[in-house]
Length: 138
Image (tube, rainbow, N blue to C red; front, side, top):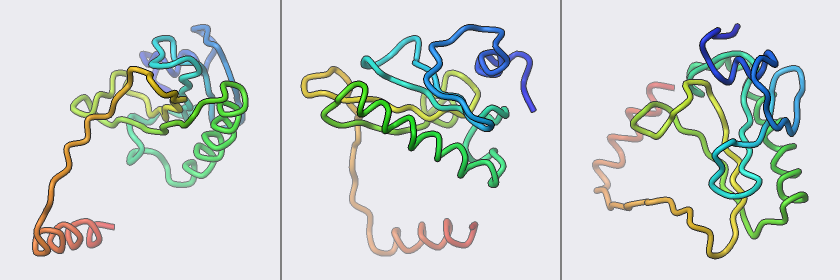
């Protein structure tokens, strides 16, 4: 299942070139063409899903198996001091391409990338309320 207008689906079909890192039956990994750091790699499912929650549950293990393999390659090939793995879902979260993709971002001291993570304290009551909302929805 592919979206004919999706740039990542076009990469999967070979209609748009990429710097392919890894490919198997379910996933494709390639270098980000606008990388945050050298070695910034994207891993995508070959089927089109906009976000992780829309993906078919049976395909998630194969996707994350590819993420695991590619992460090891990024570590060995780029020798970073650390790395981030993340995805963004929806415009408000910074998703630009509407196809599920997992970022593998190698990190070095002094690189320019920063997560802005404003922490807050919530009351016990609020934490319990949130826990109930999420756990009851699963």
